Image 1: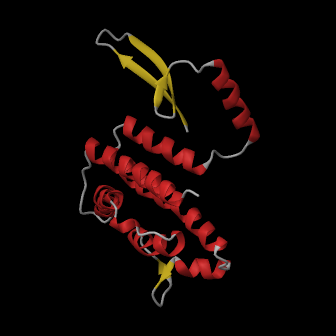
Image 2: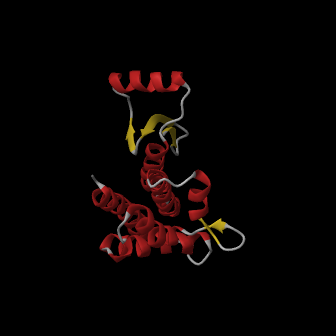
Image 3: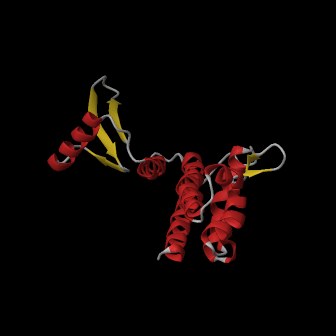
Length: 186
Protein backbone atom coordinates (compact mmCIF):
# COMPACT_ATOMS: atom_id res chain seq x y z
CA UNK A 1 0.00 0.00 0.00
CA UNK A 2 1.36 3.39 -0.94
CA UNK A 3 0.02 6.61 0.44
CA UNK A 4 1.12 10.11 -0.45
CA UNK A 5 1.10 12.90 2.09
CA UNK A 6 1.37 16.60 1.44
CA UNK A 7 2.13 18.55 4.60
CA UNK A 8 1.24 22.22 4.32
CA UNK A 9 2.48 24.40 7.16
CA UNK A 10 0.95 27.87 7.46
CA UNK A 11 2.90 30.42 9.47
CA UNK A 12 1.51 33.45 11.32
CA UNK A 13 3.16 35.79 8.81
CA UNK A 14 1.14 34.08 5.99
CA UNK A 15 4.21 32.29 4.69
CA UNK A 16 3.86 28.58 4.12
CA UNK A 17 5.94 25.48 3.59
CA UNK A 18 4.99 22.39 1.57
CA UNK A 19 6.54 18.97 2.10
CA UNK A 20 5.61 15.76 0.32
CA UNK A 21 6.04 12.28 1.75
CA UNK A 22 5.27 8.83 0.50
CA UNK A 23 4.24 6.06 2.87
CA UNK A 24 5.35 2.60 1.76
CA UNK A 25 4.86 -0.32 4.16
CA UNK A 26 4.79 1.82 7.26
CA UNK A 27 7.84 3.97 6.62
CA UNK A 28 7.45 7.59 5.67
CA UNK A 29 10.16 8.41 3.19
CA UNK A 30 10.89 11.42 1.07
CA UNK A 31 12.39 9.63 -1.92
CA UNK A 32 11.99 6.10 -3.20
CA UNK A 33 15.26 4.23 -3.89
CA UNK A 34 15.76 3.46 -7.60
CA UNK A 35 15.41 -0.33 -7.23
CA UNK A 36 12.14 0.10 -5.33
CA UNK A 37 10.91 2.63 -7.88
CA UNK A 38 11.51 0.14 -10.72
CA UNK A 39 9.71 -2.62 -8.82
CA UNK A 40 6.85 -0.27 -8.01
CA UNK A 41 6.49 0.81 -11.64
CA UNK A 42 6.42 -2.83 -12.76
CA UNK A 43 3.74 -3.69 -10.20
CA UNK A 44 1.60 -0.73 -11.20
CA UNK A 45 2.02 -1.52 -14.91
CA UNK A 46 0.98 -5.15 -14.35
CA UNK A 47 -2.42 -4.08 -13.09
CA UNK A 48 -2.37 -6.92 -10.56
CA UNK A 49 -3.51 -6.18 -7.02
CA UNK A 50 -0.94 -6.69 -4.26
CA UNK A 51 -0.95 -9.99 -2.41
CA UNK A 52 -3.79 -9.81 0.10
CA UNK A 53 -1.76 -10.78 3.16
CA UNK A 54 0.97 -8.28 2.25
CA UNK A 55 -1.69 -5.60 1.83
CA UNK A 56 -3.22 -6.41 5.22
CA UNK A 57 0.15 -6.31 6.99
CA UNK A 58 0.88 -3.00 5.29
CA UNK A 59 -2.53 -1.62 6.18
CA UNK A 60 -2.08 -2.54 9.85
CA UNK A 61 1.39 -0.97 9.97
CA UNK A 62 0.02 2.14 8.28
CA UNK A 63 -2.82 2.33 10.81
CA UNK A 64 -0.29 2.05 13.63
CA UNK A 65 1.86 4.78 12.06
CA UNK A 66 -1.20 7.00 11.62
CA UNK A 67 -2.33 6.34 15.22
CA UNK A 68 -5.55 4.73 14.03
CA UNK A 69 -5.50 2.16 16.82
CA UNK A 70 -9.08 0.95 16.28
CA UNK A 71 -8.47 0.07 12.63
CA UNK A 72 -5.19 -1.66 13.46
CA UNK A 73 -6.91 -3.85 16.06
CA UNK A 74 -9.83 -4.76 13.78
CA UNK A 75 -7.55 -5.40 10.80
CA UNK A 76 -5.37 -7.67 12.95
CA UNK A 77 -8.33 -10.00 13.48
CA UNK A 78 -9.10 -9.82 9.76
CA UNK A 79 -5.47 -10.71 8.99
CA UNK A 80 -5.64 -13.83 11.13
CA UNK A 81 -8.84 -15.11 9.57
CA UNK A 82 -7.63 -14.24 6.06
CA UNK A 83 -4.42 -16.19 6.65
CA UNK A 84 -6.04 -19.14 8.44
CA UNK A 85 -9.06 -19.87 6.23
CA UNK A 86 -7.11 -20.95 3.10
CA UNK A 87 -4.77 -23.03 5.28
CA UNK A 88 -7.73 -24.89 6.78
CA UNK A 89 -9.41 -25.33 3.39
CA UNK A 90 -6.19 -26.76 1.94
CA UNK A 91 -5.91 -29.19 4.86
CA UNK A 92 -9.50 -30.33 4.33
CA UNK A 93 -8.88 -30.72 0.60
CA UNK A 94 -5.81 -32.84 1.37
CA UNK A 95 -8.05 -35.03 3.57
CA UNK A 96 -10.29 -35.62 0.56
CA UNK A 97 -13.24 -33.38 1.44
CA UNK A 98 -15.19 -31.85 -1.44
CA UNK A 99 -15.75 -28.08 -1.71
CA UNK A 100 -19.32 -28.33 -0.44
CA UNK A 101 -18.22 -30.32 2.62
CA UNK A 102 -15.48 -27.81 3.33
CA UNK A 103 -17.92 -24.88 3.08
CA UNK A 104 -20.23 -26.63 5.55
CA UNK A 105 -17.41 -26.83 8.11
CA UNK A 106 -17.34 -23.02 8.14
CA UNK A 107 -21.12 -22.75 8.79
CA UNK A 108 -23.21 -23.24 11.92
CA UNK A 109 -26.83 -23.75 12.87
CA UNK A 110 -29.97 -24.23 10.83
CA UNK A 111 -29.42 -20.93 9.03
CA UNK A 112 -25.89 -22.00 8.06
CA UNK A 113 -24.35 -18.76 9.31
CA UNK A 114 -20.57 -18.36 9.23
CA UNK A 115 -18.89 -19.63 12.38
CA UNK A 116 -17.00 -17.17 14.54
CA UNK A 117 -13.25 -16.79 14.50
CA UNK A 118 -13.18 -18.19 18.03
CA UNK A 119 -15.00 -21.31 16.86
CA UNK A 120 -12.64 -21.65 13.92
CA UNK A 121 -9.70 -21.64 16.33
CA UNK A 122 -11.25 -24.09 18.80
CA UNK A 123 -13.07 -26.43 16.41
CA UNK A 124 -11.58 -26.32 12.93
CA UNK A 125 -7.87 -26.20 13.78
CA UNK A 126 -7.99 -29.56 15.61
CA UNK A 127 -10.30 -31.01 12.95
CA UNK A 128 -8.29 -29.86 9.93
CA UNK A 129 -4.75 -29.49 11.24
CA UNK A 130 -4.73 -32.14 13.95
CA UNK A 131 -3.68 -30.22 17.05
CA UNK A 132 -5.41 -28.27 19.82
CA UNK A 133 -4.50 -24.63 19.43
CA UNK A 134 -6.84 -23.54 22.23
CA UNK A 135 -4.54 -24.98 24.91
CA UNK A 136 -1.61 -22.77 23.94
CA UNK A 137 -0.38 -19.47 25.35
CA UNK A 138 -0.67 -18.05 21.82
CA UNK A 139 -4.38 -18.87 21.77
CA UNK A 140 -4.96 -17.20 25.15
CA UNK A 141 -3.11 -14.06 24.03
CA UNK A 142 -5.00 -14.04 20.75
CA UNK A 143 -8.33 -14.48 22.50
CA UNK A 144 -7.81 -11.60 24.92
CA UNK A 145 -5.63 -9.24 22.88
CA UNK A 146 -7.31 -9.60 19.48
CA UNK A 147 -10.64 -11.41 19.34
CA UNK A 148 -12.22 -9.91 22.46
CA UNK A 149 -10.83 -6.47 21.62
CA UNK A 150 -12.18 -6.66 18.07
CA UNK A 151 -15.60 -7.80 19.29
CA UNK A 152 -15.78 -5.00 21.85
CA UNK A 153 -14.90 -2.42 19.20
CA UNK A 154 -17.28 -3.56 16.46
CA UNK A 155 -20.18 -4.19 18.85
CA UNK A 156 -19.86 -0.78 20.50
CA UNK A 157 -18.63 -1.78 23.95
CA UNK A 158 -15.26 -0.11 23.42
CA UNK A 159 -14.79 3.20 21.67
CA UNK A 160 -11.19 4.07 22.45
CA UNK A 161 -8.25 1.80 21.72
CA UNK A 162 -4.77 2.55 22.99
CA UNK A 163 -1.53 2.24 21.08
CA UNK A 164 -0.47 -0.62 23.37
CA UNK A 165 -3.73 -2.51 22.74
CA UNK A 166 -3.37 -2.15 18.97
CA UNK A 167 0.27 -3.22 19.00
CA UNK A 168 -0.47 -6.21 21.27
CA UNK A 169 -3.33 -7.23 18.99
CA UNK A 170 -1.10 -7.25 15.92
CA UNK A 171 1.73 -8.98 17.81
CA UNK A 172 -0.59 -11.71 19.10
CA UNK A 173 -1.78 -12.43 15.56
CA UNK A 174 1.78 -12.67 14.27
CA UNK A 175 2.75 -14.99 17.15
CA UNK A 176 -0.32 -17.17 16.55
CA UNK A 177 0.50 -17.46 12.84
CA UNK A 178 4.10 -18.38 13.67
CA UNK A 179 2.91 -20.96 16.24
CA UNK A 180 0.46 -22.58 13.82
CA UNK A 181 3.09 -22.62 11.05
CA UNK A 182 5.55 -24.40 13.35
CA UNK A 183 2.91 -26.85 14.58
CA UNK A 184 1.98 -27.82 11.03
CA UNK A 185 5.47 -27.84 9.47
CA UNK A 186 6.24 -31.14 7.78
